Structures are given as C-alpha cells and as structure tokens.
Length: 285
Length: 284
Image (cartoon, rainbow over all chains, first blue to last red; front, top):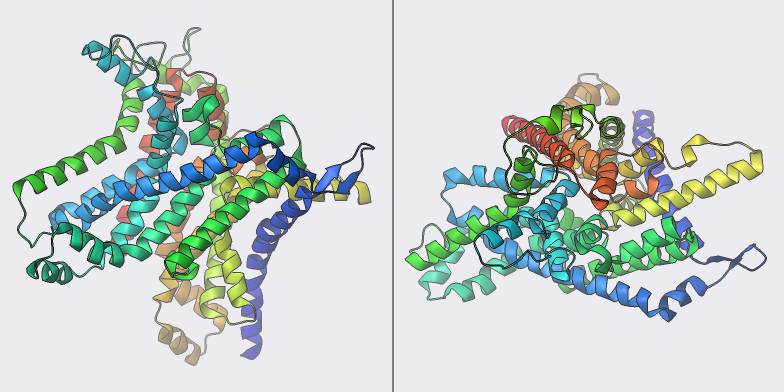
C-alpha cells in the first residue's frame, strides 16, 4: 500500500516536474542570465549591466515601456466599465429563459482567432472600409477618413480582444449575489448608485480582480492587436522585444526588455492582489 | 434594478439598448468579415458587387480561392498537427497535475502549485522568447560539447508544440482539478476495500468520473492552440501555422481569400464551441 502510494506520487510528479522545470523555470532563468550578458569588442560574452542601462538611457525604450503600462491599465479599466453592466444584465435583469442563450452569444466571438477579430475591425475601420463607405454614402463625411492606426482604435481593439476575460468571471461572481440583499437595500431607501457601490461592486470584487489581472496581462503582452491596429505609431513594448529578437538579432538586449516586461506584469498583478486583499490561489478558482 | 424590483421605463430602455449596442460591437467585425467573403470584388471592401463563392473555389490567374491556395492550405494543416499534439500532451500532463495537487501530499507542494499557475501571469511573448533562448542555449551546448546537432532545439514544429503546451497545460490542470475536487472519495475507498489497487481505482473509477472535464478541456486546448499567435511567433520555423501565415498576409495587404479563411474558421470554431458547450451541459 505504502509502496503503491510512492509510485503514484512518482507517476504524477515526474511529468509535472518535467513540464514546469524545462518549460517554465529554466527558460526564465536563462532569460535573466542572457539579459546580463553582452558581446564585447573582442567578440566574447561578458557579464554586463549595459542592456539595462541602454533601456534607461534611450528615451524611446522607457517611454514605450511607460506608455504600454499606462495604456494597459486604461484598457483594463475600460473593459471593467463596459463589462459590468453586461454581466449584471445577464445575471440579474434579463428573463431567466434568455440567460443561457445570451451567455452562449457572449462567449461565441471569443472562440474565433484573435487575428480574425482584428482583421474584422480593420475591414470596418480603414479608409476604404465599411464604416467609411456608409458614412460617405449617407453624406455625413465628405470623403473617407483613416480611422485605423490611431491610439484610440488600438485601445478599442485591445478592449474588444480581452472583453471575455472580464465578463466571464464577473458573471460567475454575480450569480452568487443574493437578490434579497439588493431588495433589502432598495426597501431601506438606497438609490441605484448606493446599491452599485455598497453591494454589487464589493460582492463582485473577487471576479473583478481575477478578470482585471488576466485582461491586464493579456493586454501588456499583446503583440498582434497593437501591431495591426496601431500601425507604425503603436509603440507597444512587445514590438520592441520583437525588433530586438527578430530584426536586430540582439538577443541579450531583447532578454533585458523581456525581463523588464515580466517584472512589470508581476508587480502590477501583485499590487492588485495586495490592494484588494486577494490571493492568486483564490482568484483562479 | 433587478427582476423583482420595480423599474422606470427609461431605465429599462437605456439598459436594453446598452446591451444591444454591446452585442452589435461584439459581432460587427465577425459579420462583416463573413459577408465580404462572398463579395464579387478584388478587395475585401464595399460596394457590394454581387454574390460569389469564387474566393473559395476559383482557380483562375486573377483569383485563387482558398481550396486551391496551397500556402494557406499547408498552414492550416500545420496548425491542425500542432493543435493535435498540444491537446494530447496537455490533456496528459494536466490530468497528472490535477491528481498531483488534489490527491497527493509532498514537500514544496505549495511552491510547485504556484509554479503551475505562473504561466497565467507570464505574458505569452515572454514564454515564447524564454523557450527560444533555452532551446538555443541547449542547442549550442550540445553542439560544442558533443558535436551533436539536435533538431528539436531549433525553431520549428516541436518547439511550437512545446511553447503552446507550456501554458495550455495550466488551463487543463485547472479545469480537471475543479472536477476532481467534486469527486466523492468514499467511492475510491470502497474500491480499495474490495481489493482494487490504486491504479485500477484511478483507471476504472476516477478517470471515468473525470472524462467529461478532460474532453472539455481538450477541446478548449485544441482551439487555444489553433489560434495562438503571441507565443508561436518566436518559435516558428519554416512551417508557419495559420495565424502566423494570416498575419503576414494581413500586414502586407489583404485579399478576400483571408475573408474566406476567416469564414471557415468562424464556422468551424463555432461548431466546436457549441458542441463542447452542449456536451458539458449534458454531463452536468
């Protein structure tokens, strides 16, 4: 019996260890090590801080970094504001018989590849796009305007792409909200805003936190949407990483950028958890 | 406010129109993409020039439909193979991890659990470059020390599979663990009392119980792998997956063939998603 137990542990532990050590731990260590290495003038690899110094000395690098962080926070906030009424509507307002249908409708677009969704927005928004076609036809616009490749469209695309990861945890957390709490507050004379801020949002906090973490992380690490919808002006930090790796072939510089991005995402996730007094384990469940 | 409370007309009207607006926002890009796949025009834009299926079937010098477009067909096939192996691997590893974290006790369990969750907070781009770096380091090491050239360590098919597996396995683990937590362990004890050994119990009883969760997670894994872009971007070799291939085409200008592929993708993934939803509802 004891022997079987040991074998069971060994059987389950070894694939998991292989996965986590080889594909998560060692690669991250290698990333960290590479970021401190530099090829010197004689062509040998030496330890150096210069990859990180470069980052702070070149304004374009750290400005892009800050810009990416601020925009990611903005996108997370916008996603939250847009998603909350929808989640509330589906769980509490709409007639129960439509609930299942609306949920399916809500999930469906997100099964489709991100690329297809971004492509759809490109066809809609570009100068020869569908929206421009209708607006000029209707006489609202004299001639087509380019709506793509602006910060606002990039943010629209990022909000769209990550919407699902905010709505789903919110729906599941609002489902557990007891209606009688809202009714009691109403009977005691609370208005809509008081109910929203004193009952609904406090109750939904775990869902909001887990949704925000995922949305923030996905936005920060997104390459596709900023690149295609923001165009040359998108200045997203993942593009800097891509340029260092693929275009300049400076892997050490790229590793330093990658590590900085990793630290940024970890710090903000950690802060978010601390501020709301949650922990990661509870949030994923 | 909620169903049971009285609400004003304006409030209802505003709320309903908000939700309608939201769903329009959600579906507009997909709908437009699908519709323009059937437009008889050289560009994926309006005005409407008449209905055609040529962007699927044609094999003319001026337009090559998706069914004859060898590059795109190849990349679809690559994506299928990648997704197949990623699904298989992550179902196996995820189920092992679920058993490990739910039923076993060992030192450093908490630490390992947090490592398992780590892929959720590591951006996909970082996973991609870090795995690329490690494989390159290992490849160089093998070559200089033993003069062996290991194919696996170069960007290509298997590196893409491993890169996607590294985070998709976490999702499978979470789904299967959630189901395993609901398992009534007295059933196991009964089987053990009746003389079964641990592996027989797992094979005949626990895995049967977990099957819907494992299959459901597998379907999700397949779709996630099929559409992954951020991690794959850095690991891909000469065999481009469909999202990578589409990205290159969209970046350099687009033809309605991309709409045709998108249409097929939308229909295909919706069918898988609906089937998955239907079966998971049924099993509950």
